[in-house]
Image 1 (tube, helix red, strand yellow):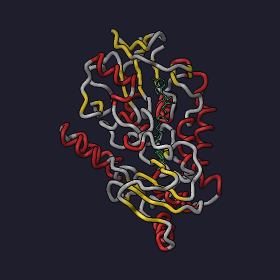
Image 2 (cartoon, rainbow, N blue to C red):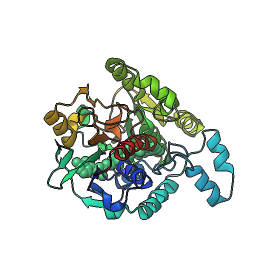
Image 3 (cartoon, rainbow, N blue to C red):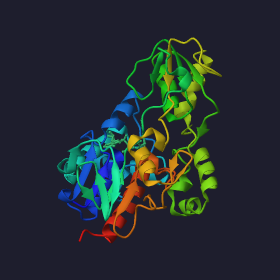
Length: 365
Ligand SMILES: Cc1cc2nc3c(=O)[nH]c(=O)nc-3n(C[C@H](O)[C@H](O)[C@H](O)COP(=O)(O)OP(=O)(O)OC[C@H]3O[C@@H](n4cnc5c(N)ncnc54)[C@H](O)[C@@H]3O)c2cc1C
């Protein structure tokens, strides 16, 4: 077997679809993961915050090519040009249901289940001509897509019995504090107001308003070329600012929040107070040190890191462990060094395409 993907979430799934499109058969790829459904983790989190619409646009899918995207699919199904027109104006956002049915269909027709092995990989060990994955054999090309290393709850709130993380299933009490300033926080303000609660927003800074989770320019070839030209310190500083929590501009958020404020049910406070419930919309833990697989990889092979990030080549491969005979690549949140929007579906495609190019350049003898 020549190719392995570690992690059976959406990034691993997108890579799988890309490899299949590139001509690999299910029998030539092994996917190691804990869940059969590639949307398993995502589904739970989106349901917890009652997300109905994708933040991403037509190209936010798991198919190997960007076009035709979910707008074309919706236009055909609804027999309407509207999704296409909205897409041209960057205003088309597929529903979560549309996205999930696309994942289900692609899972079915790609052969995903035939390639899946239910196993957690503890160690990736570089050997001549490939990588040994625990006792599962040696693979010439490996893509690591382990996702985020757990949910983040601020230290001072960890023992507070009122706390629930926004990505864990929950209902709403009659008084709710929402900690955070990103899309999950904004969605929770609206959810809790809708449920009739009095809502307090606690945030460290004023939220950034932007349509996508990083500025649009960093999804383009040109924007990316400028990013890749930056030295390590500048790149780290830019990533810090790009990855600040943000949520989209628009009346969808502004109107209910203004109404809530008028009714005395929405306000901003500097710190957590005495509300019945505290929802931490504080995202995920960040950094290789929190992921046992990546931490061991860095320690064992002396890989370069910048702050808590793994330093990667522009095509999302691990320098020093990738050459003409073997590939180690990374996708998803741990690949932000190569692509600032790595933790998006478009970002997953970016890593997947880089991986496929390496696999094709070095076929199994
Ligand atoms: C609520 C929410 C809404 C989002 N909305 C959008 C959106 O609209 N558009 C967009 O583009 N992006 C969106 N994103 C971002 C992005 O698409 C997701 O974060 C995506 O799920 C990342 O996929 P992943 O495969 O990296 O991680 P995950 O889906 O978390 O999957 C990782 C998988 O790897 C497994 N794993 C981990 N370590 C190992 C190991 N050592 N061995 C074997 N298996 C392992 C885990 O068990 C898990 O199954 C959203 C994210 C969230 C949370």
